[in-house]
Length: 571
Image (cartoon, rainbow, N blue to C red; front, side, top):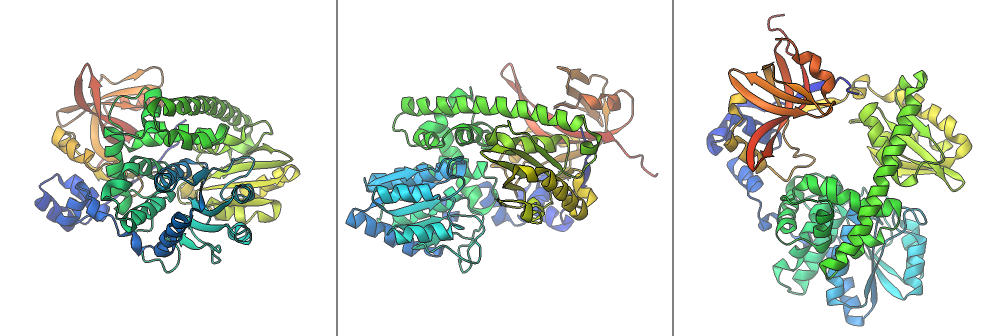
C-alpha cells in the first residue's frame, strides 16, 4: 500500500553554495547538500571528506573521567574483581565486548553481565547487583544504562559495590550515587560532542585508560568496528565525532574485522565491502535477535571470541534466533494487518493499538514499525506477559509518543522510552480503556500533516549530471546516518521511453528520458504507479543514486522512491 507523501525540497543559500562550488570545484547540487549539513568552508569540507584521528576529542574533557580512571586504577592495584555490565541490545553488547576485552587483558579478575530481557528487563537489575555481591565484585562498570538507576545503585553502594556509569541517555534531575558518571548529556559536562552512543562513551573511557597507562595510541582502535556497529544500530547522529569513529570503524570492519562481524557477514552470504547500511540491516538484527528470542549473552561471547571458529559457533546461534525472529514478526504483522483491514473503525483512527495474548514479546516493537509502513500513525502493539499486558510503541516523524503515553499513565503499571519509541505494562482488563484514551490523546494533539509521511528531498538533479565522477563524490559522503543521510534527489519533467515495465509482479523497472538522456532505474513495490507511465505526460521523480552490477560491469542507476505527474507550468 502506498500512501501519498508530502514532498519537501530543502534549500541552501545560493551564495554559500556557489562560493563552495568554486572552492571545491564540484557540482553545485553536492555543495547545496553540504551547506544544508553545516559544511560551508573549504576546511570544513576537508574535515568531512577526509576524517582524521586528530578530530577525536580529548577524553579528559568528559566530566568525571579522572574519577572513573582513578577508581579503575585502584581496582587494578588492589586486585579487586570488576564486572562489566551492559544492556541486551547492539549498543549494550558491543560496549560490553569492547570494555571487557580491554580490561581483561590488563586485569584478569574481570567478567561481564548482560541482564535477561524478560526475567530482568531493561538496564541495571537487582539480579545483576546480587550476582555481583555473591561473586565478590566490588566495582561495576555499566554501559549504555544506569543513568536513571538511582535506587539500584544506592542498593549496590550499601552492599559495598561501586558503580562507574557510562551512558548516553538523557539524565533526570536526580543522578545515581555512582563514583563516576560519564555522560556528555549531563549538566556541567564540557565534552564538545553530545551525541555519542553507549559504546562510544565506553570507547572514550578506554582511550583515557590507554593514555593514563601510556599504551600505544592504536590500542583502543582495535575496537572501532564494534563502535561503528553500535553507532549504526543505535541510530545516533552521523556527524562530528560519530562520523569519524564510524569512518575508521568501517575501515577496520573491511580490512581486519572482529571475528563476530566476520562470522555474521559469512552467514549472511555477504562478500562485498561493508558499509553502514550493512551493519544496520545485516549485523544489528542478528545481534538484537539474541536478546529478543533468547539470551543476549551469546552476542558478547561471539564478539569476544579468541578464534574465528569459536565466533562462528555463536554467530550460528544468533543467525538461527534471527530466522525465528523473522518468522515471528512476519506472521504477527500479517495477523495485525488482517485485524485492521476487517474493521472500519480501526482503519479510520489516528492511532493503532492492538492486543493479542499469543504474540511474541520479542518482536512487538518491530511489528509496530511495520504497521507504520502500512498505516502511517502512532502505533502500539501489546501482548500477554505473565499476568499483564506489555508492549511497544513506535511513532511517526515529529510526534512525541512518549508524551502521549505519559498522558495515559493512570491506566498503566509502568512505562518508559523516548520521543519515537516507548514500552509499557498494564493490567489486561485496562487494555481497551488504554487504547481508547491513547486514541483521544493522539487525535487531540497530532497535527494532521504528521499523519502524511514527508519525503525530504536534498536537491534537484538533471539526468545529464548523473555521471561517475558525481557518484564517486557522493560515495565519499559515507558513512551515512541521521544528520548525514544518503542524499535524495528530484528530477523534473522526465518522460517514460515506453520501455518501463513491471517486474516480479510488484516492482517497476524504469527506463526514463530527460532532454535526450536516458536513465535506467528500479522502484521497489511500486507496480501500482504503472498507470502514470502509460501516457506521454511529463513526470517528476524522487530518487537515490546507486550502482548496478551486471556480468561484472557497473552502471549508475536511479532507485526511485516516489513519482507523480509534473505540474503544468503557468497554471
